[in-house]
Length: 144
Picture 1 (cartoon, rainbow, N blue to C red):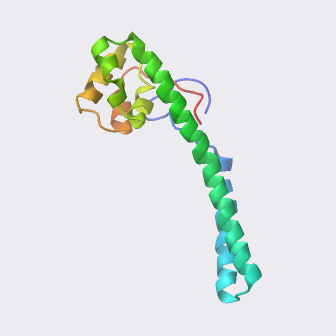
Picture 2 (picture 1 turned 90 degrees about the horizontal axis):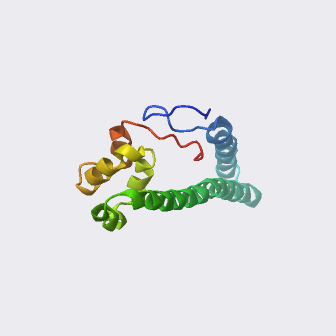
Picture 3 (picture 1 turned 180 degrees about the horizontal axis):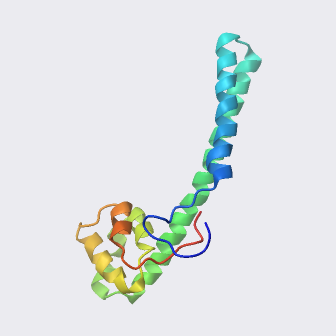
């Protein structure tokens, strides 16, 4: 994503070579191998299906594990940002889910306190509603 302004409507980053082409390059041969294994069964054809499914799983986890680490880093970063909030909010920081903290990372420092109160009050209950409530967007160009 080019550096610049981000907003609720424009902040997700898609990498076409990964999100579209790699998926296509993995799924199409797997479907073909499965077709061959069903229509002209052989142990070799079955092993190709098993191998192809394994490659798809490896690709999935190669994406999922780093995203999990990014989520943990975002959680830590937001907890550090909470140090500037009033004590009553800092004391309740553990009650905010990682999913909601990921939404809060886009909030400017000026509106963070209000948004945290709304999250803790149950008004904002998911990442999408948190992001939609942000008025002054703080761009995050590091997460992909």
